[in-house]
Length: 282
Image (cartoon, rainbow, N blue to C red; front, side, top):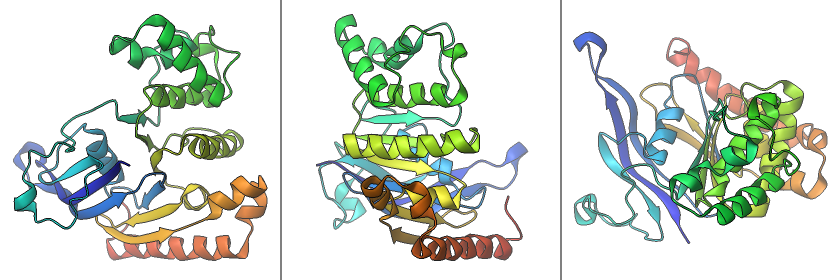
């Protein structure tokens, strides 16, 4: 089965007006295994979104490379691998779906048309587009809203459409850039549970960015913490709170567990410590 592998990646951006080059990421070595729900946390400016953009193929690394496929090349030297790897990520692809913080839906299309838009661009026939989009709209609880204009939907429902659109291409991996950050607290909790149900149903690799420690602990099967710029992965925790929720269906109970609270305080201490060492969040 496919895994995402990141090999010695760093990203540098040119400075403004000829200023000093900015190193956004440095020395990232990391992989995501099939079926993992990985959540990235860190102070603002630590490079979380830059890392997601690399996975999506929106930008290219300054050094190193990323692969998504069945090959395991972690033990090979870079020079032996070269940069012509068949599985190398060199741009966007249908094997990766992206859900943005702002849903980025097309207001002149209805719910079903938005969910099926990527398939239309690929030239998939109308019947298949409708069948596939309808399946994922049902998965996110929008089976009764196919014909509704998206501007008539609440923010939470619009984000559900965005999630369905990200899944409709049947990607190997779903990348989510703070998809719940703009929602009210109650809607946010509902969609946290929905995303875990989608993860359980599809068994897809997930990479999820958030600024909420509680959200990260609740959703992650694996949590990574990144340092302030230049971004590096400093901590990597395996968690099972999401599995406990999927078994019990009681989010409040999970979030009040002593183990959950202890881990929350530990993670907060790490992030606050990073901020102090770097003079505050950027």
